[in-house]
Amino acid sequence: MEQQSAGWYLKKNKSIEAMQAKSIKGKSAEEIKIAMGKAISGDFSPTLAIVFISVKQDREVVSGLLEENGVQVFGVTTAGEFIDGEIENGSIVVMLLDMNPAYFRIEWLETSQDTAFDDARKIAAFGKQVFSRPAFIISNSGVSLDGEPFVEGIIHESEKADGREVTIFGGKAGDDLELKSTFVFTNGKSSDSALIALVIDEDKIDIKGIATCGWKAIGTTKTVTKSEGNTVYTIDDKPALDILMNYLGVEIREDVETDLTTFLSSWYYPLELERENADPVIRTAMFANREDRSMVCSGRAPQGSKIKFSMPPDFDSIEKVVADCKTIKDESQQHADALIMFSCVSRHLSFGMVVKEEIEQVQKIWDAPMAGFFTYGEYGKAKTGKNEYHNNACCLVALKEK
Image (cartoon, rainbow, N blue to C red; front, side):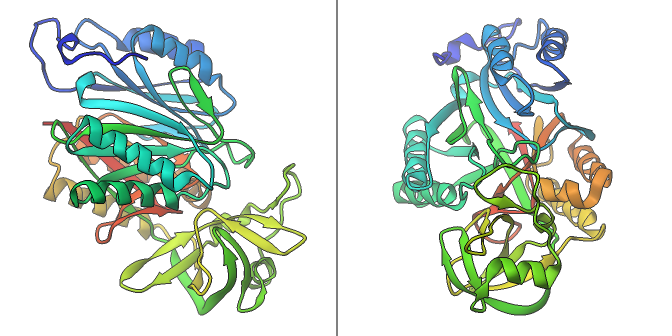
């Protein structure tokens, strides 16, 4: 879609006012069409739509509806959707923003595990071409695609350009826990193996956020004795799948048709990787292979890594997430025009509908429109540390026009 010029973006009163945002939802494309008709008014003409949609819905039709109204689309399939505290499944939620089109770009690239790092570098290089201080909200499709190279590629290219710390947030696409095919999409494009980036000019839009978790490590420290990328073959020289099943009683799922046998209960017991000079990071075991007894994690577990298994958090975790988000408001982002949340599906599985309280309480901190979805992985920065790819985390992003 051809980019609009800055001069096109004038309100009815001929003056550029603060950015507005409205979140809408629907159980079908027709319901979204009706909701969008009610949302668009004389003083609100959205230019950008952040779309979180179930794979059961027709994303091409929804994208077409938005494009007909001159709206650019950042689209991701989900494992559950929400606006404010209203949690849905199998539905569509949309954050509509009337952000000045000169302040953002959407970049989209087909990708693979082999090209992920270089593709992320290309996204970062594009960002530096259009803005002096680009920030990146990203998502990728591909169920077993490791998210770490995307963060590493953006950081590598950005720091090479000017040395400053870059802003990265986002979430990995889902597919309602079918664990088959996830998608990202934009105007006229959709793929089950792609990287999409909403690149925002940080000189014009203030972006603050945080990634926080709450899973607690249990038991003794173990060692990843054989791994390749995000596939773990042995732990303490024993087959990784056997360790997981025997140690934690994880059961294999038989109801999913895939080359890899999937097991759902492992979402509750991810690996915590211990690291030197950095906080531990969580890695969810998503798939198992019956033949070689390996397991495929959502992110890398390097050979030689020290790990512990983790238990789901208790309800104090919700209080921690809310407190961390309140810190962002108190210290750096008093007001927000829009909120975007990327929350791991494991939080929904663990907390059930109580996760609604987490979403509601965070939204009330700023009392701004919110849209979010349950992810297969999250991108962002913890209170201390650097930008990373996370599992089992809640990532909150607050946007405010300067």
